Length: 107
Image: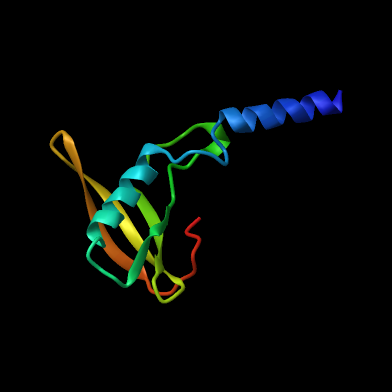
């Protein structure tokens, strides 16, 4: 009985999206950071990680903020705060440096 319960839990976690693809908020925040820092040689834009929508009890909640860790070319990471701001039918990103050399995992 226990193996079936464990298998069911694993399948539920996989179906809920734990440990997988980026959600739309993460993608938008990452794209905004990459665009914002595109001409700044101090950053390695191949290594940008952003927090996604929270999923308490596997129910996704929409957020309007994300924290992104961006690897510096010289090592370490800076954290950026990305706020999603609705403008009519569109969304814009307001980006600000939150912490310098703060580690490379925003989650």
